[in-house]
Length: 496
Ligand SMILES: Nc1ncnc2c1ncn2[C@@H]1O[C@H](COP(=O)(O)OP(=O)(O)O)[C@@H](O)[C@H]1O
Ligand SMILES: [Mg+2]
Image (cartoon, rainbow, N blue to C red; front, side, top):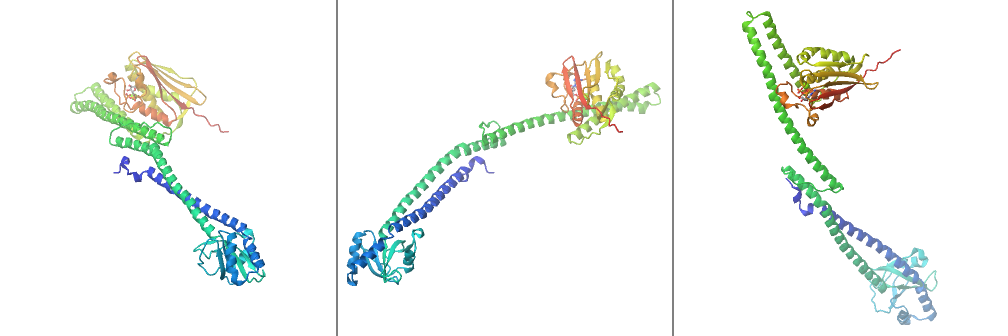
């Protein structure tokens, strides 16, 4: 396992960025220098050639006017060179062979000839064609500009005067390399300094912070969530840190939640087996009596025992129904089938089935139904289930002499509101948000006597959610509780 905080330096982002900067700056510097080099040299050569364009012609004229003979040519060249220090003077025949050579600074011929085409090109060119270069006969490997002029008839010259700036040219090269070499060196130094500074900043503002986040994650993974992510800045890393911190909190909360759920499930399993055990024991006793003493029993005894068995069977079946509903809603498989039905009729029907229980509990039901028929568009079976559970809760959590008021009212043209109010024990404020959770039961002291699983409201809320509705509750301890929900009214489609 590679741990983030122990990445070797050369593999960090900081190092890579610094290296990239160094390469970038050096490359930039070299490109700039080379670019300038060609431009500067070309401009320089063009200037020199333009300035010295006529020098060869002046010399050629001087030579023709002085009528110097062949033997004195060498002396003439040396004396001319005094006037043009820094230049090399050559006399070249039409084949390009050097006949005579003179310069102020003593120099040796390295090549005995020059390319005559370059001279002819120069004579026919104008300054826009410059620079025109040729290899300098007194220097190795140096092409440079020159000036030239014909001797004798311009169309068919006897020879040419050739003037070059070899010494100066070499100097230009050397000084140029000195200058740009220094620029290159400075570029390299500068880029290293920039890269190091950038690296330090990068490390300080990024790598170090990312490492801290990684460290916190690592510690968290190792089970130590004490290291808090304290990167509160608003940039990307701050955001990442914030989200990771959030995530850690959520994971912790989820684990807590899971732990609680798990505990509840275990408790439920215990309570379910207990709840199943009780009716089973009762049924077993009754059935045993029925099997063994059937003949001796009176008709009244017989029906009493059968009635007791029946009650227990109903109770078990209701419990199993609830468990089944929770199973399908938790796996998202619960579906509803909506159809129009009259709401009040359904409520009356449910009330009818609870008559006995209501009487036993000595509770009065107050009906607050309108005269008109209210047809809703919902799943009648599921809505019946909701009303049954709300009513049975109202009965379970009320004391004898209490009152249950059921209201259905049309709050707008499209919505019907169902409300059931009781005068029972009420729900503590801190419990209200939890009663819809599965397996949750408050009123702990009551539960010793009141049967239930804590599944009813969870299922009801889910059924109403499937109807795009919501089960709402208002309650005050010892005063009473009101549950209410809305349903869509059925809009009759008028056909003509
Ligand atoms: N009308 C009510 N009055 C007081 N408490 C209620 C009422 N309805 C529900 N509760 C509380 O909400 C809890 C959850 O209800 P429910 O999900 O129907 O489960 P159960 O009826 O099995 O206890 C009940 O245990 C009870 O504490
Ligand atoms: Mg219930």
